[in-house]
Image 1 (tube, rainbow, N blue to C red):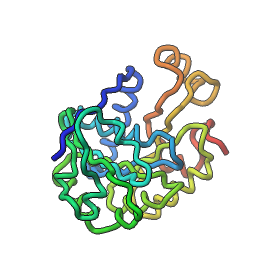
Image 2 (spheres, helix red, strand yellow):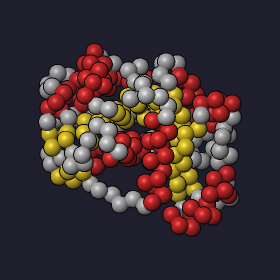
Image 3 (cartoon, rainbow, N blue to C red):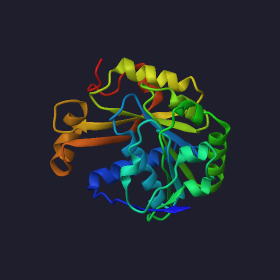
Image 4 (tube, rainbow, N blue to C red):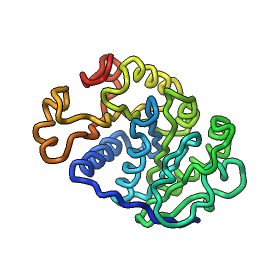
Length: 252
């Protein structure tokens, strides 16, 4: 097993509480929800950051957790580590070059392991859909309390739909004010067709200083003490998301 030291980014109280809230919401989704894929509609909505902080939150709460970087096309997770050489990743395991234990990285955070994406392959969807990936999920399910899988944006590529078949639940990250309601609903419907349970949608980059839905009710207090932008960690229930766009700040 590889060993690395992670970069420790300083978080304010608001951010820490947001991820605690998200973690708690997932824990109350059911005791059988242990393998979770995280996706978004488009790049740069913050899904990788949410995946990382969510996995770290579970680990700090005493659960043995692994974060799997399954964004094989454009991974940003490699920038998270500060010390230690990462020689192998998920793609090395999927093509049979190394075993799973060799590919996994042990971090300096107790209970937290990380599996980086590895070299960019020419056939990401095929690799993620092969039997070795399914076997890996089964092994991780036995060895870890929580398995968080960071997947590519479903609005851009099909990889997430392939991965979600092996997961217990999915969370969609939405950048507030950047994604149209129709586009978000289309992504949600596409994910639902795989049979994976959608736990909810998490709003990221919510502006707290404005006069919008969240800025009006929460910005005066939280914006004053904790900054301009906010991760709205309370997941939007699936039925609300199906009927109407919950926050008015989502584009029509």
